[in-house]
Each structure stands twice: as structure tokens, then as C-alpha cells.
Length: 83
Image 1 (tube, one colour):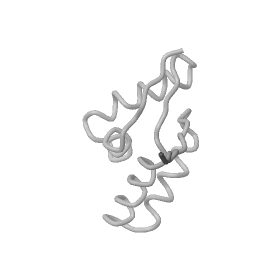
Image 2 (tube, helix red, strand yellow):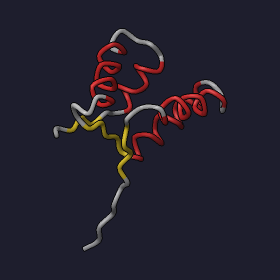
Image 3 (cartoon, one colour):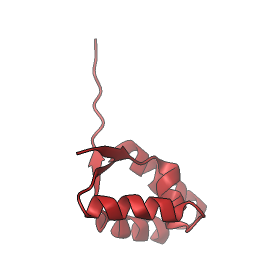
Image 4 (spheres, one colour):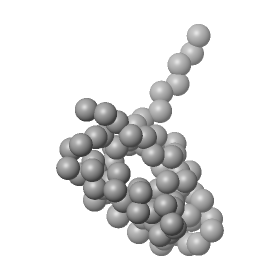
């Protein structure tokens, strides 16, 4: 199964109903139908949360967090390696 990776811009555009929101919504819909996996880095999610909180209020990113839990989105942990 193919995987699609969302960046912060895509999810912010979706939450703020920007013109590209329909495309992101289609990606989410197709992931819900198991046509592909939908992935996002936990670091990217933190970026979305922080920027939304900074620009609006604490309530807005909490709402976005609750909405995203209903999405078929898998958060990927970040791994650090040392040499």
C-alpha cells in the first residue's frame, strides 16, 4: 500500500479551509478507505500545534488535535542517531 506524507502546510490549509483543503480532504478520505496510508512526523504535528497556539489561542490547537484524531493519520516518531 502506498503512503502519503503530509507536511504542516497541508494540514493547516485543511484546518483553515484554504483553497487546497479539498485536495487534503480527498487524501484523508482515500486513507479512510485504505487506499493509502497517511503519515506525518510528530515534529511536524508539534509545529502545527505551536504555530496555531501562537497565532490564536490554546483552545484552537486543542480543537485541531481532537479533529485530527478522527483522521486516519499515523504520527511517526522521530529518531535520533549518534555516530
